[in-house]
Image 1 (cartoon, one colour):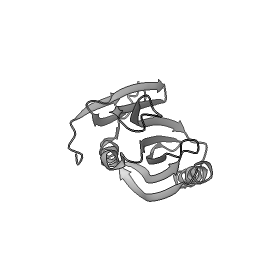
Image 2 (image 1 turned 180 degrees about the vertical axis):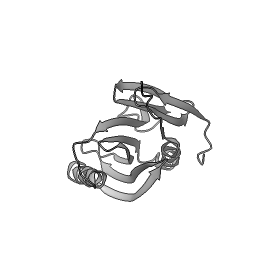
Image 3 (image 1 turned 45 degrees about the horizontal axis):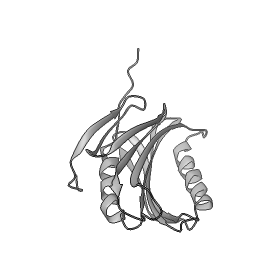
Image 4 (image 1 turned 90 degrees about the vertical axis):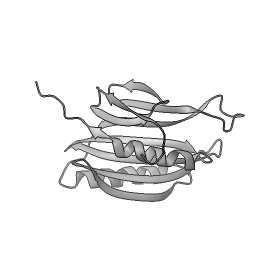
Length: 168
């Protein structure tokens, strides 16, 4: 791992996802289709945040798009929604790649939270699981901490493994 931080194996039985995550991070099950990881408390914007922690969310979504190019269409619709929803949205990087045998798309972008004016860096990865299921991984960090956490987010993303479900 490029970050040099001690990583531990984490398996989420509800989503069939295995990852390597920083040992100190806390996992929380959000619902049957999502969980998140919270980083250590950071001292930043203490006048605004009682406790700030970077986070990564992992969610399994059923697609509503079908057809031969359904994943490409899903990515395009996701990107368009972000361009129109997020204030001062700026796409910094994007790439298509394969994670094990699954098609995947990664983007790094920034946006500005309208009330606080804080700039937020987000890394998002979309990973196909089947012809109608996508894993959405989103990692967020405030400007000022991005150099510390963006490489770590990439390490966690590269470690993702979708574990085949047991057929009974």
